Each structure stands twice: as structure tokens, then as C-alpha cells.
Length: 198
Image (cartoon, rainbow, N blue to C red):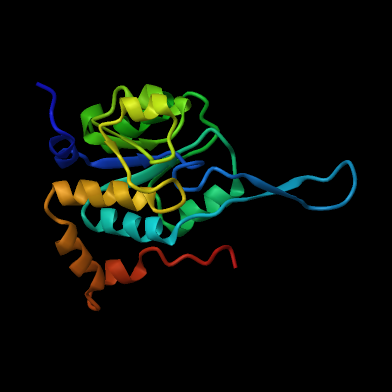
């Protein structure tokens, strides 16, 4: 008999997110940096503050967090730095390559890794990982592979949903929230304080 999603969540040590459509709503807004045919684009994405705080909660609970995305984006690099993500892989057409490296670096097995995705590029990882999570806006093929589907869509708190699910399954969500709210907890105070590249 296959383990329940909650049983799978209890084993998770590393949580990896796709970016576009998972930590964002999937829109890619390109603003030209100058006039004329030689203009280059500045890519703009919107991220959910709920997800950012959730990543802090995951870290306080001892879960290591990262992203794997096919695109290369300075915006993602800035957000990843602000959130102090441990694993950041951009330009990954075949995401299992990055996953294998993460497994080696973290010293874990694939069943100790959770992955949150929304589109077919995420399927190879979701077919193998310990806990496959689809966002509410995910493609049907992705939802059919998922052990859990978030109530919210990408960019609208889906990342936080995934984290809450894992921490609830481990029975530590309320405890970690209290850790975060503790004024004497230096780790919580320093977490998710980004500058937005100011």
C-alpha cells in the first residue's frame, strides 16, 4: 500500500520549488531597457510575501529549501538571495540533473525530497521524489502525478500551502510559528528580510 501524503511529508528534509507558475503566477513581464531594435528586456515577476514567510518557517523547522527553474532571471536571483535559499539552479532544461546534485550535497535520498511544480517540465522530478506537490493552477498531467495539490495557485500562496502541509503533517506548524514570533529568536528576526535590490 502506498504511503499517505502525510506519511511522505514526515520524511522530507529538502523542499524544492519550480519558480514560474509556482512561486509566481506564471506571467513573465518584459520591460525594454531602451528604445530601438537593439533594446534588451528587463524581466519582472511578482512573488507572494506569504511564500517568503513560509520559507522562513520551513527553515526554522529544519527543512532546507531551494528552487530549480528552466529560465535564467536576475529577478529570481535577487528573490532567492533575499530569502536565503540554499539551493538555486537556473537554466535547467532537465531538472533531475539539479536534483541529483542537491541529493548529493544534502546527503539525502530522493524520498526525503519534496518538489512543487505546475507544468510538464516538472514531471520527471515529481515521478521520483518523496512528496510531489502540484499547485492549484497546475496542468492536469501534473495534478494527476501529485500526492498533494495546494488550495491556492502559484504566486498566490501555493508555496506557503506546501510548507504548511508538510509542517502540519510533522505536527510542528504551531510550534514553528511561535518560534518565528519569539522576539528573542535571532534566526527568525534575520530571516526573509530582503532589500528588493535597493
